[in-house]
Image (spheres, rainbow, N blue to C red):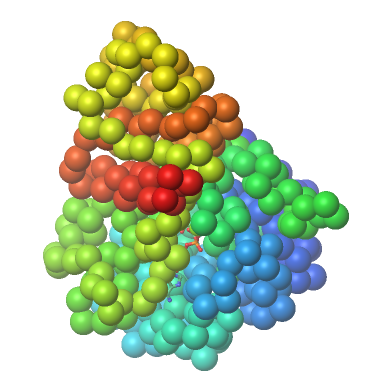
Length: 331
Ligand code: TXA
Ligand code: MG
């Protein structure tokens, strides 16, 4: 996966749009983000409107480094410093007690703020040139599959005057492919709000602490709603044994399938599109959303995904597939 060299004039244009209170779609290592000046309430409201996102859903504030703890958070525990030292810049978001600078428009009125220092060179160049912090949710309409290419953003949100965003920066396909891991370190025990590229095992190893799942009382996170990451076409996760049977029957509904190559080879069912699933979790994550986008636009009646392997490495992938299944039109 090659990231093109940073285009300095495009970065400058993006920083200029952000200074004016505009919104810019841009690549991060996880997914494309839709960025606005985190200190400009009107710009953040425009951002929410573009996504169709309810105002009470908090957004991640993207910062250059952990110096931002002092500006955006209070009572920062050691565990947050350790996690930032180990995984920043990178695909990890930390939820901390907020400072006064983290206003309600960013936090959805909660007393915490989510901070992330992204690693993608284009995003870092924009942060540097802009000079402030950037509020940035994933650059998709609320509830839909996250974008991992500039084309996905163009298809979903589009550019003004006919579309929703002021500028899209094309920095290639996102190297990680799924959203950041979110860890809440605002309470006594670190809790995992959203599994992501940094695995629970990695978090536990770095901190020497158990990282439990969030209980029902934890702050709401959009990524924790069951109906999320949804394609338009009904999607079913199928255990490999059942898929062998399903694909051996000719005719029936037109399927679009994401499954291991070995299963696709003897397929006799009517298939609009078949995509070979990657064997390693990192590769699978990188291709997951682009595969879902492709399957969804193949004209199939049903999307079929072979249940991937289990284990810590696959936790985030299972999470996203389960939500895609719950959120698609099959209810
Ligand atoms: O990888 C990512 O995290 C991408 C890129 C663009 O950085 N961003 C992303 O943003 O996935 P978004 O808005 O699509 O998801 C952010 C999640 C939401 O589920 C939101 O509810 C949660 O972070 N969140 C934000 N602030 C929070 C807070 N104070 N407490 C708990 N959850 C929070
Ligand atoms: Mg999102």
